[in-house]
Image (cartoon, rainbow, N blue to C red; front, top):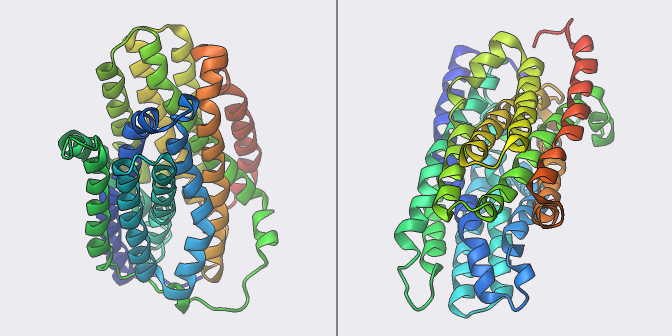
Length: 399
C-alpha cells in the first residue's frame, strides 16, 4: 500500500471538495430525469405502459457505463475521464431535449440512457476521493463527496421549476437543456481535480479480478451496497405513484421526495465520523436496519405522515448502508487493482438498481404499496446475516 502523509491528506481534502462540487452538478441529472421522464413518456409514447421507460433506461445506462468508464480512466486518468464523462452528459441532455422537440420517444429514451452513462462516471467520484487519502480519512472523504448530493437535491428540482416551460412549444425540453448546461459546468469543475494518477499505480502484480471478487469480505461489501441502493431505488420509484393513488396530491408526493433526498445526503456531514468511531460493518448494518424500519412504517398506514416517514428513514438507511459498504470495498483491493475492482462493484450495484427500477412500477400495479414494502425484508435479512458472519473475521483487523 502507498504511504500517506499530512500532505497527501491535504490533497485528498482538496479533491473531495472538488468532487463534492461536481456531485452537486452531476447529481442533479437523475433528479431531472426522474421528475420529468414519466411525464414526457406519457406525452411521446404510443403505448402508455412504456411511459416510465426513460427513467428505467437512466439506471440501465448507469450500469452499462461503469466498466467502459473505468477502462477509460485507467487509460487516461481520473481528471480527463471525468471531463469526457461530463461531455457525455452534455450530449445526453441535448439529445433528450431534441427528442422532445422532434416528438421522438426513441430519441428521448436514447438521451436518458446517455445521461445514465454520464452518471456512471459520477458514481465513481466517491472512490476517487479516497485515492490520495490516508486510511483514517477515507470514510470521511467519501462522506464529503456525498454531501454534494444535498445541493443536487435542490439544483435538479429547481432546474425543472425554472426551465420546464422555457420552450412553450416543446414542454420540458428547456429542463433537459438545463441539465446539459449543468454538465458543461461540471466539465470546468472536474478540470481542477488533482488525484493520484491511476496510471501511476503499478501495472503488474495485481491479482486476477476473479480472485478479488470472490473474497468473502468483497462479497459482503457488494451485497450490502447492492441491497442498500436497490431497495432505496425500488421503494422511492413506487412511492410517488402510491401516494397519488392513495389520494395525496402530486405536490405532497414531490415534497416527500425532497425530504427523502435531504435524508439521503444530509447525514454525510457525520457518517464518516460514525464509521471512524464504530466501524464500517456496524454503520452499514444500522443503515440496513433503518431501511427495514422504513418498510414497517410503510405497512402501518397510508396517511401522508406514513409515506414521508417511510421516505425519510429510507434515505437515512441508504446513506449509512451505502457509504459504509463503499468504505468496506476500499479494503478489498491494492492500489494497482482499484480501477477494475471499483468498476466491478459499481456494475453489480447499479445493475441491481436498474432491475429494481424496471420492476418497481409493475409490482406496485400488481400487488400494491403493501407488497412493495414486504419485499424489503428478505434482502435486508440476507445482508445482515452476511455482515454478522463476516464481522467475526474482521474483529482482529482494524476497521
